[in-house]
Image 1: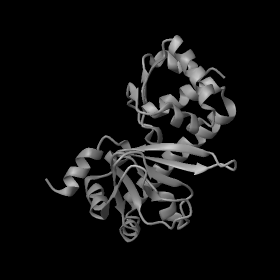
Image 2: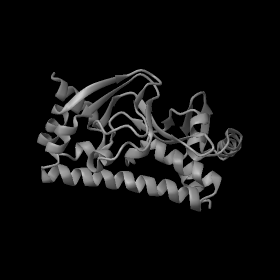
Image 3: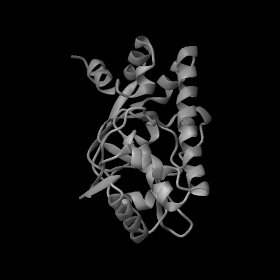
Length: 230
């Protein structure tokens, strides 16, 4: 099996990529180079020049930035199958945040020239607009959650997003989220102590169970009820 076929087979679970016509999928992957990253290694840092349109082939990345107080804010966990980086490719602006590997990870990077050639195709350009719409909707949801919901509701809503692939916002969810409580607290900009109290309350309600480095969803119905507790 060729590299393109292997990569494509592993990415079809991503709703954006799977919606592309087959020839567009092949053209996209044909313009890729492979970027292996060790755990803790940066794909790029805030302020770096654009250097590709990216997809996680294997492993996980985190997108983060530093707040004014020097604390790290985790924006998203980028899992295998997700594509990102299109905004810098379109605008030419430097990257706005850091992206670093959470574990040994393989990234596919579509070269800038290949991306620009693909953008001449109306179908692909429309697909990139749709991808940007997905990411913008995700961003607005995060902002809305921060402004309009209680801490417990914010936690519940982020757990639902994480169960659906976070940035990908896929319809199909999973029952287990591989994420430490420390990272979840950094996503929500709350203290580890506050998060622990709220998670214990969710456990008591039967919504979730807690394990080392992961959170298991026991009842989506209860978790959905907690989402709206504003």
